[in-house]
Image 1 (cartoon, rainbow, N blue to C red):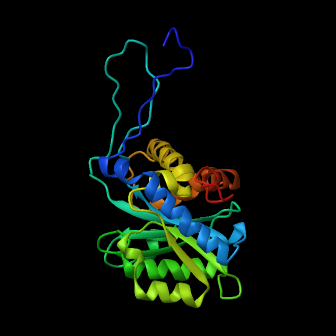
Image 2: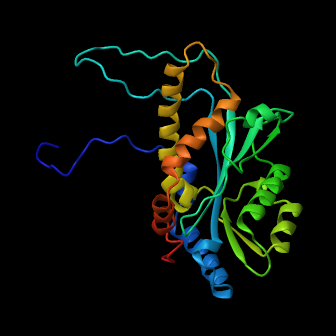
Image 3: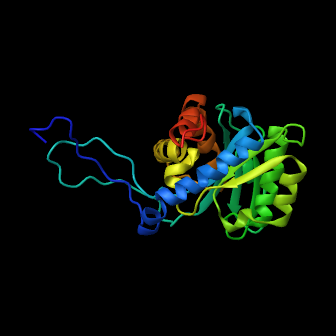
Length: 262
């Protein structure tokens, strides 16, 4: 590194073996062939090309934020919550024109309570199920949320790019898409870390900022438990910073979806 100044010490991104194997030329070519076919039939405008995905927002961060300490100090500690924490799922939709729509929250509770959305931004939607993970019923609710905020209809065709999770394959959701002129196109399995705009450009810095915001909230609210209804508050603060048109457009450009660049 002293000889080669262009080298730096980096923390590698962890990629499991299945993802490493699935992200190959054959799968990438197959996706872009499908995308080319869809665009050939309907030349979607950038504001009609959307990507949706879910990410987890834990009430207890998995990694502590960095802190300033004296040089040579061997151990640096940071207090954390005693609880294991619960995970709130966040579903987002962004377009190739740099737009984003109000977030969709999924809480790990059997019954939805209004208090969960006390600090949510205007237009955000919250639902609940026992697991806190997306299933076919919740995805149908997300589709209604998406249709409402994008104005998708048969006269204004829309393309929605999403991963191939089984929860997205429900008759009700597909019927909703057909009735409102939405073309659903899925990414190849285990390839979204390289091919999905939200994964490439938005979610990684978003999660890093969520950890920082959580640490700042904890220091400003000593003795108060960070609960489910606080998650939308921090999410809203982070999205205001991270979900910019420039960042969203860079995700679509880097993945070659728009402008189309296999």
